[in-house]
Length: 224
Image 1 (cartoon, helix red, strand yellow):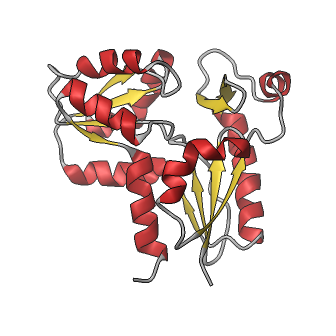
Image 2 (cartoon, rainbow, N blue to C red):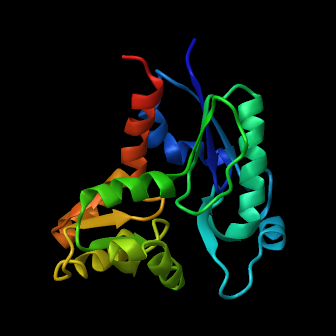
């Protein structure tokens, strides 16, 4: 029997086609079940239930009807916790949150609850680089990320994975003269193609979480 992994997206499970590159790196060896924090909600409900005050941390995610949602990280935490418990109860051996934000861990025996933030921080710390570059979706997320990655002496710039590739290329080019060897795409929305754009324009090595994490998960869950 295949091990089952649950994926929690910040948007809707209807966005599964947009995650097919990541899912394809898990299948067919693993059974993949995806749910979303915003499943079944329309724009007005999202803005009402997941609103946030100025200065609060928020998450950027794309909905299937070409709407980019900005939702409260704190309010998303409660829904992620509920969905994780649901996935474990339905037989998932592992749950991966498709977001680099900070989330509370459910109590579970024998299951793995994986947060990209924790996994990537361990990988990045192991690189032993004096300075690391990061790209976050929005400019006003930079102060929070500066605190989050303070130990890694970060240089952080902003460009959304849901914006234009021209803007991403311009942002990446700003790293060309920066004293960093590695640029990290600090959002699970960034794809392999976006990683190639950043590598080309910045002249730096690039780390894309949605490429790295499936390989780590398969090493844990799939018996070779």
